Length: 179
Image 1: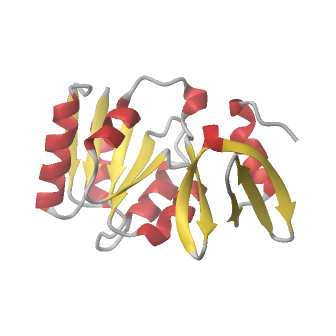
Image 2: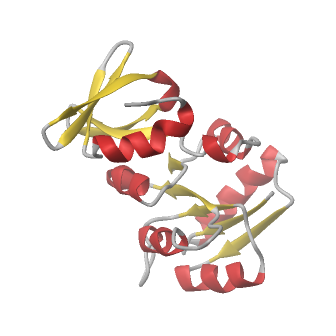
Image 3: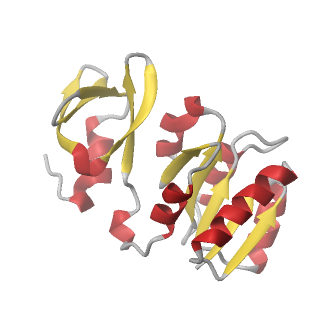
């Protein structure tokens, strides 16, 4: 598997490269310093997964992910950022994960395990007590529509999501959910 790290800060790229190399699951790691640099390198070499920072000059990581989402075979997008407030937006551009800095090695290893194409979405961004959190799909029991929101129920809790029931249905159908 080949990956690309896109971050404008050299120390952040270096640390993430070290952690990714520690997993032993990647054959190549390409680094890019900006969205433009990432696109140029992506034209030269295909990658299966892209680790994106959100806060970058000119074109930010969210804008890059949105553009990549339009490709015929886009790489999986994993956001690696210090900003928790963009987790809901990440779902909208089909990010497969949203990692907060400092990154935990276990989460990276989990992300790099071989997966079927249907298993790319593992967490749903939700709101709980005013904070944004990610709920693992395997913990979701059912979902119901509540006005402009969706209410996601787990065994022990319930969460609000700004994602429509229809969008959740489309995203979760491969995981055995149905309306």
